[in-house]
Length: 452
Image (cartoon, rainbow, N blue to C red; front, top):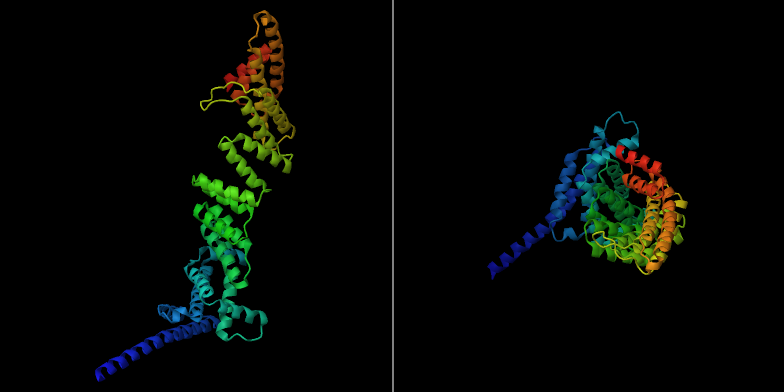
């Protein structure tokens, strides 16, 4: 019996010693951190104190009891952040002395400083939020009241988090300025996260900046991650849905792209960018009627956009003159005349609006010229239904064909003015000049073709 009692007593002593040892590690970390902060005040920061504080707090965080305490993680946050600031100060010393502007110097230093310690500090803030929200609430309440209810350590923690909030924004800007867009994206997001934790409000501006930086970095994973987080947090705009759509399209995940675009269109039915993306998708998939429906809505929102009329003209042109996958012409549809007229109206409207983009203007001019040329050719090649009408019909058809040939010429001439070396336009004009009896112009165009 005595032997058992001795074993029990010895075990109990070991347990108490272990617990006390872990608590003493927290105390050691606190003391070393305080010593470091004093050397900072004296203008001679001693890194050895900070290193000692880190070693002690890391041991304390391996213990089941002390790692559950917000105070332990608060010390870890302050130690990690202090290490980051020390390294930042060292980088600031290396900045080119020729840079006189203080903000510029700071941005250069932020761009060069390693981020591991700041990452650790931010992680600790998230852990504190998860294990003891009340701790943060008390800190916030004490700061807002300013009634001295916070003790010294709590005040230091509060000031550290406030500094971290500004620091994260500076890091993000510094990394962005240094064109380190991946890191900038992370830190814009961290800024938003810190602000959200400390203020209990959703920092949509910095979350949005994170999405922009991820896009600049051309990082599909981060584009998807940050934009989805904005959607999940219910602070998304149409931009977020469009960004996710584009990322999925880059990954060739068409199904996911269609689903997110559909969801975005449901939430933001009036957004012109999402409408345009959906229209482009319809066009790519050959869903021309769906594309037309969207384009007509687009014109209602932006009636002076020549591009919409140009694309609509092209759709009606394709419907009037269908081709198979190999580009071979198919029989004209029963409503050919209607589709032809619709194409003509929209091409002419695009030309009338004189788009600043010369490609749209050239496309409209060339297409309507080609359309008139082809229509004239179709008329000239029509067969008479009755043999007794042959001569008469051929003459009528030729007259009508000439009318369309002559309508085509000025549009193609304008197209050639925009692209003076465009061989397809030259070839079309040479043929039309010949068909309309203008041999001199036809010869001139032949010479121009040879020269190019």
